[in-house]
Structures are given as structure tokens and as C-alpha cells.
Image (cartoon, rainbow, N blue to C red; front, side, top):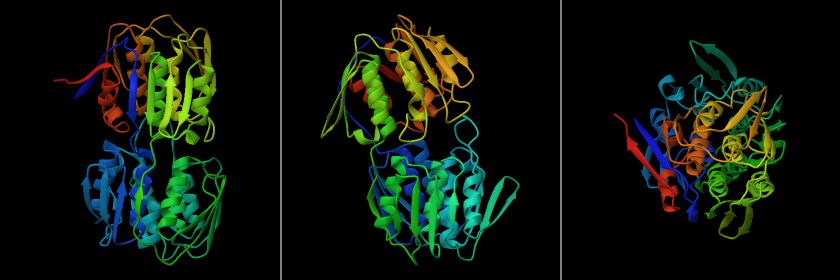
Length: 418
């Protein structure tokens, strides 16, 4: 097992390249199940979750070849319809094979998903949608099974916007008979990326990025050759890293139109944010101003940036209030930030953060993906040494994070723990 050791106090400076988006690459990889032939995806980040879904595709019968950030997937001989527990338990995005398998093969058997322990994220909206499209759904010994000789179009209303549900049903609908309309759909940029890729395969998807997505079913799709969008959450994390260390960092490849809420709050905190053709440049403030933050689905402030901003606000000049409105159990990083000397208290769905003059290095433990990033950020600004353990969470969503931070001037290293 590894841990990350950080000696804080260095101002970050320089240029860092953003990797491809994990949350876009995962559904795109699952979408390859919709069409035979060889698919080619570039700008795919080399992460634990990506390796997991590639293993899953191979179990289902696809041939997978990886070369750096490029992955070739031949989906001609997809025959198995079962996504086993041993893989799905580690990553809930594995459930995204459900829609493509039912649409193409008429049958899917997928273990109920696992992933980060940040709250209940049930797939009931996925299943209700597939049932509305004509699938027979059953639950048996921890597996969900869906069967349909041929899916048909339907109008499906989500009680709450769901990214995974929107993606799963959008993929399933591409091969359904007739037209499917997804109402109160999620609007995240990763959904737009998936819709663009599906259309490149011959699908007819419109309205992605709005709360109403329309899919006209087609008879068959063709393989895709597609480049994954940049990771907006990784970009946002480096932007906060610049701010919390009073640094000056150009986040190359960051797409500003996907980061409007993050940029707005960074500016409100006192950071200088400049946009150019190469990405986003952030100059950290001498004094961080407190913020009021409420997480919400896109285009609101992303829940996946809440922990990183909390780390920054532990050093603000005043009191900040962060309301978490997306997941009910996403303040697990608070106890670990408190170990570093922060002053945070929880009041229901809100975290009240009283800024302190200095964080103090200490051993801390990551509890989930974004929490692990927040601890690294706090360690960059803390006095003395911070050790972050259980960094397998970090490796699920950040490609070579410590290497990139080291290149920006951080005193950071990964060490093996006996």
C-alpha cells in the first residue's frame, strides 16, 4: 500500500496539462458495446477505474488494446451479458453497461454497484426508465437482470437529475424503436460528450446539455474514433491548488465553459483567473476571502469540487458556509481536515468553516476520491509534513497527481508502506 508525503509551504508555479475526463471516458467505453467493429478512444486517462471497466469489457467478450492514452476496443464478439460482482463492487460506473447490453443483445445481468461511500446513489431511475422502454426487470441475489426482445421509445421523467441514469438510458435509446424523450435529464458536460460520440456513431441524439434529451432510435451504429474531453474536476483541483498556495499556475487544456461556477467562486475568494486559448491561469490571493457555496447539479457548483474548496477555505479570512445538496454523506473529509488544525463544524447539510491562520501537517486518511484530493491540497499549504494514506481512492480519479504537482514545485512524493 502507498501513501503520499507532502512538506507544505511551497507556492506552485508553472504549467500543468489536464488529463482526459474519467467521468466521460467511463460511459464512452461502455458505449462501445453498442456497435461491433473496432472503436478507438484517445485522451483516455490511465486510472484504476478505467482499468476496471476495460477488464469488464474483456469479460463481456470485447478485445482491448491500450497504448498510452489511446484504447482500441473490438466489440464484434461481445457475447456475455453478465457484469460480475467482483468488478462492479469497486466502481459504480460499471452499471453503465446495462443499457448498451440490453439495447444490443436484449439481455443484461449486472451486479448492483459499489464505489465511493459518499451516500446512497440508487439505480432505481435507470431501471424505471428501462422498464418504460419495454424491458423486464428482476432483482436476484444482488444482481439486476433486464430482458427485452426490442426496446421501444418512451417519454421518461427523472424525479431528480441523474447523470448515470441519463447516460444509461440515452445509450439504450439509440437502438430502440421510435423516439425516447428524457425529461429533467442531467446537464453535465460529460453527457454532452457522450451524446457527441454517439452521434458520431450514427445515433440521433439532440438536446444534450439541457434538461430535455431526445433520442431517435436507429437500426445499427458504427464504431467510433473519438477524443475524450478534458477532466473539468482535475482542472478545478489544480486551480484550487494554485489558490491555496498563493501560486501562479496555467492549467492547460482546462475548458472554461465547463468551469464557470468554479471560476466564479475562485474570483470571489480573491484569486485572479485569466482565460486564454491554452486553458485557465490562476494566481492565488495573498488573503483568501470566505465564501458561501451550495452544491447543485450542473451548471451549479459541482459536488465533486466541494471538498477541494473546503480545504482552501480552512485558510480564509473569515467564516465560510458550504451546503452539500447532492450527496448526504459527503463531509467525511471534515474529521481529517480537523486533524490538520482546521476549524470546521457540521450542521445538518452545512459545513461552517472558520478560517485559521495556519494548517499543521499530520497523518491523515482518505475516505473517498475527492476527499483524498482535498487532503493533498491542505497538505500543500500546511506547515511541516502531511502524510495521506489510503490513496487508492486518489488513483481512481487522478492521473499521476503527485508527479504533476512536483513539476509545479510542490515537495511531494509517493512512498511504499510495508
